[in-house]
Length: 162
Picture 1 (cartoon, rainbow, N blue to C red):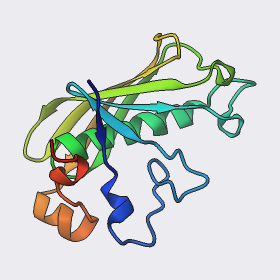
Picture 2 (tube, rainbow, N blue to C red; picture 1 turned 90 degrees about the vertical axis):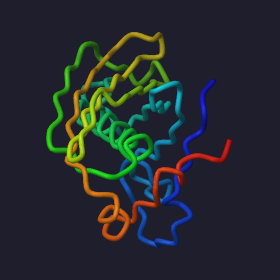
Picture 3 (cartoon, rainbow, N blue to C red; picture 1 turned 180 degrees about the vertical axis):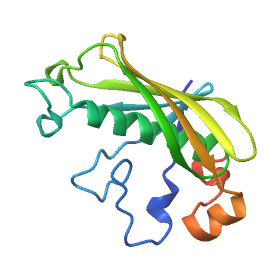
Picture 4 (tube, rainbow, N blue to C red; picture 1 turned 60 degrees about the vertical axis):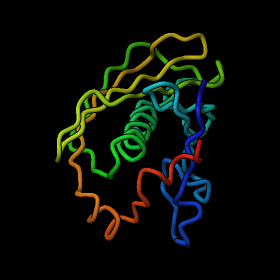
């Protein structure tokens, strides 16, 4: 059963929270919401015409942004710190048609060390077909620096108490 992942940045008191990937305050952003399904962070997103590349095809850069944001939330919620993407290898396997409706994004941690995290993500069409995959590498900040300099609220802030 999936478990909702809270967005603690909404209640952080920051008036300038406009993350392109996850802030509902950014009317030009993706406004992703997340949940935990087993060891995977999941998001559902409905492509819109503004994100079009070729006619009716979701732009590849938007697909990359969706996967990068998703993988970042794996680091924050499960990796227990924040990090910055140092590399991302993306494979586009099938066109994502905007007219097909909602897509599903899934990602999980494959390895974590003190300073690095490796996360793999998938973008699935509404029929479950894998349309894109990503392998992301993150440089991790020590949790004290993440909290003091990057507003990281701690891993417990991403989940309601069970």
